[in-house]
Length: 203
Image (cartoon, rainbow, N blue to C red; front, side, top):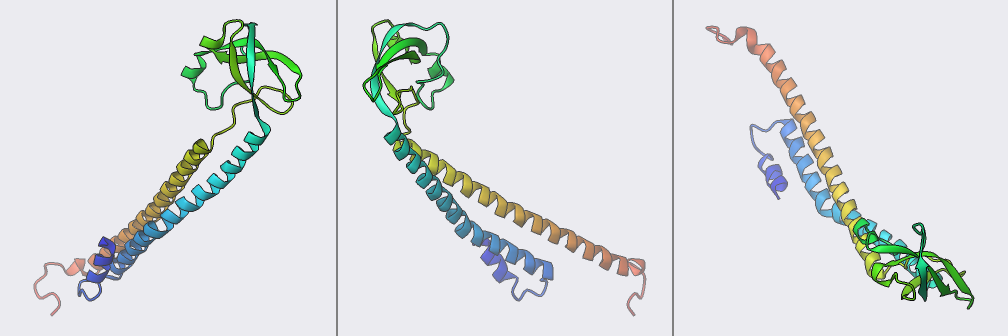
């Protein structure tokens, strides 16, 4: 709005310089891009990320199956599999490596080292475990809600970066115009400077 007002104000102003009009058009164009390009970039990036993530969610839900594991004993080393996706450092400290037995999708019994919540790490305790179709422990599949949240973040990030890019280009253009304006002022001052203050100047 300010850009449009400024552009209108400079239309017939007798003090208007060419750089003033260009600067007003630059501001108007930047405002239009911020209103149109930024939402479009955010929506496009978010929609693309959501479609990709939802495909990954469906693939994981098809390939990963839930089962129940039973703790045999505590493990001597930390496990590399069976952890829940997105586990933070503080949550990881609440888990313990155990040797457990579970049933693979083909019905065979499997034994391996996995992680379980500390309250489920005593021998004989049962806890939920996700496996692939061959029976190997894997992360739990991503949920659709988590995928949408990641897509929203991707869209917001794209919109923010687009807005920063537009504002950066606008600032660079305005800086260039200001330097050009100063250069013209210096040339004008140099042209009239030698006669400045003299009696009869211009007569």
